[in-house]
Image 1 (cartoon, one colour):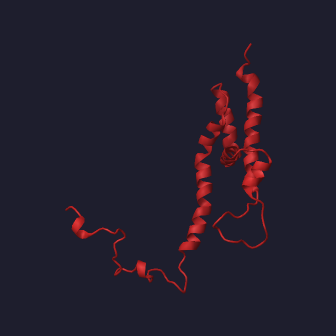
Image 2: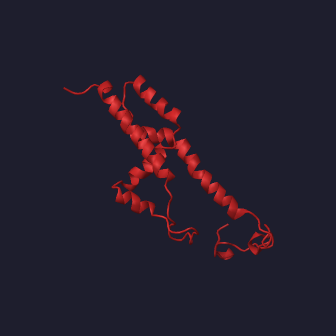
Image 3: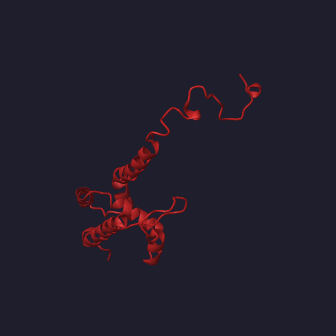
Length: 151
């Protein structure tokens, strides 16, 4: 005899909460530097990829867990309440879809700070003074002969 949804629900919700918590813990981990990012001060940190391999977690599961973990606790509870109301069970995909605006925002916030640092004008190189930033530098970026263009 198949199990009723209400009999499975507590295990399903525990599984979803465990994945949510795993993602929070993974997100808090210190990460080593990757190739091409230069040497960082302060010693060697463990590689994140090595760590998830060591604990037997697939890379995709780690990414999904971190994405789910961006859901605020009240949104996680709303997802459970909505599933109860419709008599369905939550899936990781459902939680990832709900978390999308939160993980997108979280992933972009670090990028924006780093980008601002890179784009900040320096006293030794003020904005608009480099050769490629001046109005008089009208070099074409494509090596296309004017004669070969069809008008």
